[in-house]
Image: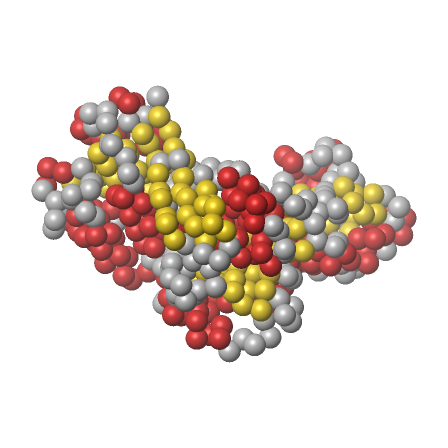
Length: 458
């Protein structure tokens, strides 16, 4: 984590008061949450719509904070204390992260995309950790606050930083990439997430492409080569080194001899190795994420055998492709961290095609932030479910009923159930299962479908 004196901080961000009396005091780490304050922390109070962190400055000092930032439009800053007065505390947090990033020698890999960002981050980190000292985004700390804090938590001896960049609207990736200045950037895919805010997949593609604004000349851009919305735009970007991944041989890297089972996926990469790569995560969509990681690793000259070992060691963040033993002998797949049509179709396809001697059940909840076509997107999910591969369809939520409506076009009604009450969903699910089923749970995070998952575990 960042270790600097107050005097050094005053050269990294614009400070509007005289901090000379405190310039030799050292800080170690940065936090905006007093619950995480440790001795030596720099406390950054943030002003929100409902709360103002400046109210907690005294508590931060009491817990051992060495110094605090203070926004100049907030009255009554503490006197005779190590306080750095700034124009805007959030902007100063971002500026401090940007300055610290430039002072370290770490190479930075930025990752964005509609789906698969966190999984790809975890895969890239596992692969690079075999040959480099790696720092990565913790959990989903990928926004205008989380990314700066991730950078400032990085040890100065870090060799490769892997930073996830999320967004909900135009301009957000631009801000993040300018703070992080990645040496390499990965776009995982272009899906439908954030249609409500951006209006079209083309607008989403443009927003994800903002990541190049922080890339240096000759920086590396890795992207899905089968995505028409990206191909034309990126083909004109001659100042960058570009590589593509995808399912077909027109890409720089693609998989063959794919085998998917519950414990993971194996595949061959033509031209790279005759030995299969094994990823302990099921699904073709996760193989695509792994291909992006492999491309990044090859550009950083990581040997193929190290890449293979790194892939084997991947561990995902919570609620992403989590397998559990369920009641009555069922197997539970909890992928309820988030959902979009692209992500939901991918995991359903994986479940349908798993070579498992189990009947398949899907529990699907609302996909949020899809805009005016949300009902249509949900209905299409239901229409695409295969009654020859899926035993039961359970849906939850006011939008989930449209998944059920779509499923009933091909399924008998006694195999499709819709709910807006989790207790009723759980009771019916327990009643219908016999014990030989594989049950998938998938929905947007706001649905909190994990509450249902927890009721099904042994």
